[in-house]
Image 1: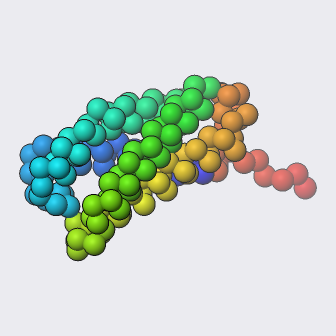
Image 2 (image 1 turned 60 degrees about the vertical axis):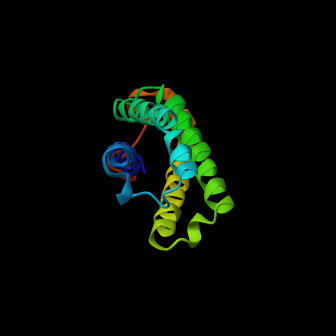
Amino acid sequence: MRRLVIVMLVGALALDAAYWSIWFTNRSWIASEHTRAYYDFENAFPLADLWLGLAGLLALVTVVRRHPAALLWLVATGAAGLYLGCMDLLYDLEHDIFARGGGGAFEAVIVVVTWVFSITLLRFAWTRRGELLAGGDGVPDDSDTPAPAP
């Protein structure tokens, strides 16, 4: 599970960087609608996504290094992602974005991926909080599980 979390964190960082790079260079590729209100809504997210990215990067570094601060950064990342996912979902529902063909489907994927990512991080952090706080070799990954004694 630890490896999955690491892969998810790397993927989230890459997707976040790609999304904002596209948004500020050729937003027509990813915009679900082309209204001033929609652009204003999306333009309110870069700072929050920067915080999510910073927390995610710190979560990644601390998980890889098996540092006790991993618990804090996993929870911060999961909470930030869940919050942003909720904001996206509410806007999309209030403005019937999901009913807009391919753009609506893209928005639905963003919301689902954000929620799955966030809930997975929060669940991982909470169910392994003792191991995470122990740091060092106290955080087993899949290959660290000792073989049962004969």
